[in-house]
Length: 326
Length: 256
Image (cartoon, rainbow over all chains, first blue to last red; front, side, top):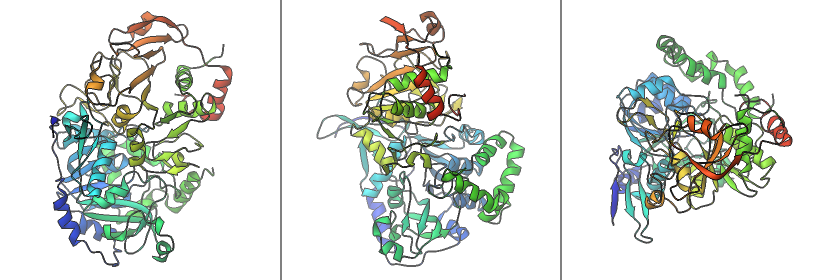
């Protein structure tokens, strides 16, 4: 096969499906209770130096509670999938938890503005980067989920991004046209927040699923946080509701409002004031340190963070906002 | 003639390009307003898509994120990014609205970094997100942007989203799908296109009261000028009413 071009970006993970196959062969396929405390799930499945990926869309259905715990446990030198990463990226950058990053979208919070602290971290030279795109990263998870080493696409062709990616431009053996390769990405751990899961890890997602269908299948370990634990009968009676099947999942943590201050579709809208506070307070390093101490490091758990930011009253307000009941 | 600000003008002009029955991936802000306005005026049968997976929502208000709940409000599908991006790859999407920190004379966009060394950027920007994907695979790219010299540069520091690359046939030669590329640039001063063999930015119409010289002064490279350059038709009273009362009543976008 003719190779026209090779990007010089580093491939942080091995795309060989046979390595993944050996791992997946050993995954437990029996129905076992995987409920555990957030502290235990992060302690057990997120190890320093591993490569992690975050589900959701930055400020939508992100596992905030799981990420706060990563900071509290002081996880370091992680690899990170910077795919549609906004508030999730802001949190992990605040903890300086990662030292390499596959970039599709980072440091910004979409229309809300740029995280000055995350930008500073990325400009500091502490993080190795490889450049991708949102579809490129989605294709990489899809390839991994399919058990193949890469997929093809025409995104990235001709751009400068491809020079700093690990894509190659090849000649299609059928059409003789040029395509970019998107190598399979098998993260060590995926952290995904969902609406409902049973104790075995069967999980349902309402609203857009972004790339989580494939991410859950690509990752070697999956930690699920959920708004509610439900009985398995709910899925047995309605099996199409399962987006992530139990055998992909390693831990299930029930944490209502676990995506706050993000938007959990059909549950609660994003707390725009709190996200704005994050962006504002970041500009003053001392104030930011105090802010992180208050909201993350001094909190014994996620509920304490919720309490400090308005508790149930706030959650009810955001629930009304979600359903446009002003 | 009605009174309007430049944001209102840009949204109304961009919306006009959406023919009825077209499909478009829109983002937050002005592109979303243009899509919503088009749906209520020129293109009632327009299919609006959001890159995180929202398909054909009945948008009740402006979204703050291209993945938030508003993007699936009474939608016909809450799909995935993999789904919407595969729609663009198989040629189902006519328009994408994009922006960037820099745009050059071939319509290439930069949203990755400022500086001349990728490894040591002067300023790091968010990166492609879905912009490169949409610029590569949608049929036509629309850009709504303020017309500033620092933004309109001879050569972007980094091609995040491809326009016509180095002009002529270079986009096709790179392997990108044929007949795709940057379609119109809508600014407060002018509407520009690339309908010439060089594939260079060319003034097509001028906002009321604006001269070619003024556009050129605010641009960091030499613009081509279409032989029949004329005035951009101002927004009608009715279009402005719909924009102000139905699309953006809280003035989130048009109040900027």
